[in-house]
Image 1 (cartoon, helix red, strand yellow):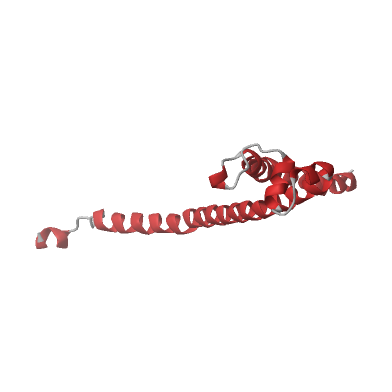
Image 2: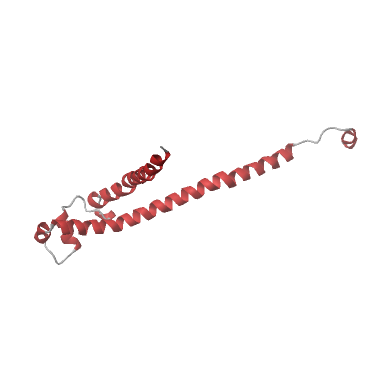
Length: 136
């Protein structure tokens, strides 16, 4: 039974990773690229043949209407460059979050413990003894 779980484990993990990648990286960038505003690099919902004609200036829309598969491949290749940027931003964000969590867990806890010790030493009054009463 454990053999079956280990065989299914990587496929479950990889499908979970693919789902997370699809939801948080691919679809937002794909939507931004195809339907986003031009000032963000989007095409505002333009048809694929028109996009291909714009990406390759010496061709006409009619040429790309006849070669839809090549047009789709051209747009997908162009979309890949946006995906690389999106992936890089996600990696930077995850590294930042990881560093912040590590800082909060290790250094802030240590700093708070050091401050607590200092405050306790400042507010700690020595026990009253006969010698303390005479000097006061």
